Length: 334
Image (tube, rainbow, N blue to C red; front, side, top):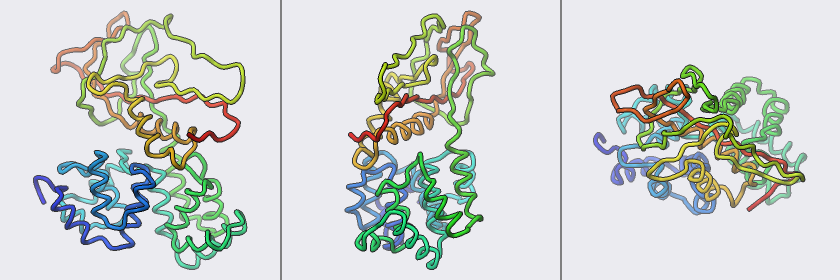
């Protein structure tokens, strides 16, 4: 499986090696990239692969997202057959080159570490805490079902895993699983940004992560601190503002596809509007925007202007961060 390891022919072969439980695992790991309604109807791995191809999350020569899914599913034999090494995938994850979100990975790994008795204990705690009816309890057949139900019913999300922590650490006493929460919180607390809202720009102040971006980017920006707009703040509660970048900084716009922020916002609404409130969706937009790696030829002048240089000259790598301003007093659904 060399030249195009993720060709449709090879994907069919991979699908034949994945059983019913594997398909459910893959569906769960894809919840952040595929619409929930379509996932629910899928019962074969090939259906998931086709959807990933249509969404651009899988290409004949690029299957990083699927590889990370297979890694979490411990399908090392399939990864090897595709011509990849588990060590390289693990290295990418440790270097925060996430394809599967840290939140999704945490839920999946926690579910995999629960035994039958622990699942029954959590089911009892869930029933008591949320007053679940029998038909709801019948869904809780595995650790993965528990994570899926807690999330679907709105008891946990990317901004709130408090109840889940309590079930795992307090009810079960599984302190050994605290590492998964710690890893997730560490990944969530990092909000990288590109600080160029200053008259004199120092290259050492810029966030310079690894990764590249091939599309051309508008970079001929004149920086003038006096012209930085003050964000409008409504005089009443219950408002939600979405900024493409932290006020005082600048956002990126590709010449070929337009605003990165608008692209990620529309994608997130398409994926999550059927089950998440708007605040949660904007948190996902923050993650997706900051996940974009931008490789830009730049020249920093004494006056603080940035202009495109020849490809042979210095190239800097940047990431950005969108900034929602939230004063809502209740959840808002689209």
